[in-house]
Structure formats: structure tokens, C-alpha cells
Length: 262
Image (cartoon, rainbow, N blue to C red; front, side, top):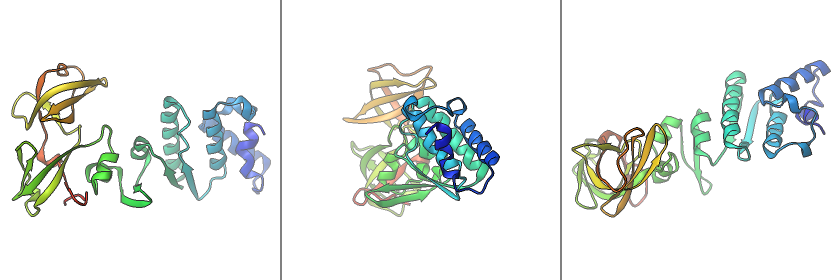
């Protein structure tokens, strides 16, 4: 069947008039950027275009709820970004519930009102993008959400003071009622290169320029930490630098269970 017939397949049993069906198909095709492709056959389409036809076939029916199972995985990067925006606009316009299955955390963070993070068939956390990023329920969520992944450092906690490997002590007032072996989590966004009064000191092993910012891989006491620096004035490769993070942005996890300490 042509693209037009494929998109309109779910309308065959609809009581809408032919004109209404045509208008609906045209509307969906325009939304998906496929107006010029409506008369083409499947063997004349790329993999990404076929995926958009499949999305259009669901959209044209205006269902009570959508289930999208990784619909953007076969699209190139630019089209994937465009389709994320279009699906979000679709949701804002029609208000239908959309269950969107993805392994891409960027898709989840940018599109979702609420995210359900699963591992081995079990729900790890349900929350808004803000919650799962800034208040992860456990180490799995903390390292799964965010790119690059959260830095993890082993240590012990007693009397509100975290003692890390190497003897560094960091006071964290909010953790005064916990003690024992813990894992300290630091997001690269919160671990910054500073001129003085740094909590960590190490050698720059790798630089990853990203334009407005630079990811800095630093060897600290035999452990690699990832920090962020200015894209305009990054540190030099091989230099010794200092790193610092606000204790309010640090995450503590029980070393045995992996659960976050609240």
C-alpha cells in the first residue's frame, strides 16, 4: 500500500466521512514531514521514513492512549531530535496519555512528565525528570540517568562526616543520623574545576570538548573522576588541577543495599 493508505489503515472502520479521513491523514502526514511521500510505496522509503509511517498509523486514529515502543531508535540523530519535539507537541495538543518505552535517557528526560525506571523487570523509581536526576532512589538510578554517569567514591559516614578513600573528610550536615559504609555520588555537572580550596586534586588524563563546556577526566588517588570545565578555558592535558563540589549536591548511598540515604 502507499504511505497514504498505510497511515489511513486504522480509519477503514471509522464512521468519519471520506473528506474527514483525507483531512486527518494529511494533517498527520504534515506533522510527520511526509506530505511529499504520501504516494510512495514501502520499498521506496528509508528505514526512518517507514518508522514515521508506523507512528502516523497510530496517530491518525486519535486513541485514548498511545504505546510507543522505541519508535525513534531507527532514525538518524537530527530526525530523532525533531520527532521528539513533534511527539511532545502532539501530547500537549491532544492530551492523550503516551506510554513511551526507551533505553535512551535523553528521550526520557526531555519528553516525560513522569519516568518509570526499571531493572530486571522491577521498578526502581517513579518520578518526574527532576526527581530521578536530582533525587535518585538508588545507585542504579543515579548512574543510569545522566551522561556522563555519576562519579561514585567509596567511604564511611559517621557523625555527619564522610571519610573517603585516601582520608579526605567532607562534612555533610544532612547525614548526621546515618553511619556506616557508604558510596558518595557526585554528578560531573556538580564537580567543578576550581583555582583553590578544592576538595580533590589530580592529573588531567583526558579532555572531551563539547563546545560550551569540556568534560575533564581526572585521576585522583588512582580513581578516575569526571568533572566539567569551561569550554573556552579548559585545563591543559596532563596538568594538576583541583576539583570542588557543594555538599548540598552530593548523594549518599548505602554501600550494601545501594539505596539512597535520605
